[in-house]
Image 1 (cartoon, rainbow, N blue to C red):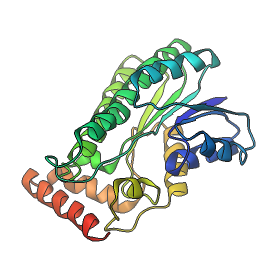
Image 2: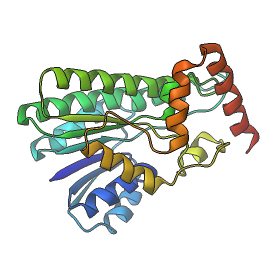
Image 3: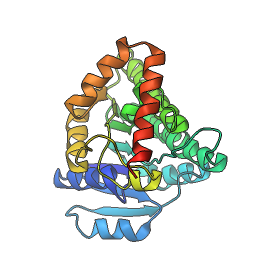
Image 4: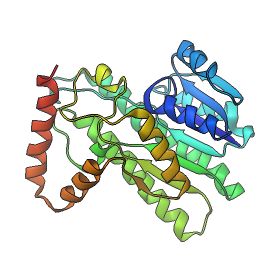
Length: 252
């Protein structure tokens, strides 16, 4: 049994790697920071292969697939991603394009390539790490919210295709709210609500993936929030999103 995890050097990706190793899976862990991957490998009990690649580069997504396509990957975890905070007209365009490359294009490419192999074997799991940001508009983090909405909709659509065609491959979207990881340091914000523990989110996400859950939402507050997002007026959600992001900035 083998799992491939992108963005495995820290946070949810790292904790998913630890959990899957505990469950007996050999791992291929991917990230830019090779030293962090080596530190993680030293703590794990199963066989671990390190691949240091920057998946913001589209060519590296294909390179990653070519490196491992013969290894019969049982689980693909698309976790790599980052966010940028600020008004859309002020945020750095190049940074946002890198975010789109990583949060959308890398997920899209890897999902498609590995799904084809899993379909041929009629088995496998894909977990795409989205966010509760996928459920509502996100003023002051507009591009990040949009990328996560893409990941969620892509996952839901592929899930529907697999169901209708009776293909035994499971695909899920993990949609946590704030999680205590390096993410808020990178984005340069502080969450205005209590963040969930990364280890809990990782384990909950994997457990629900194995159960075939389509949209995986850790924590009762975010579950309630998703329900409200379906019934509240759009302009009210936009206003809520703006105020929520503004609080993050004020808390720094």
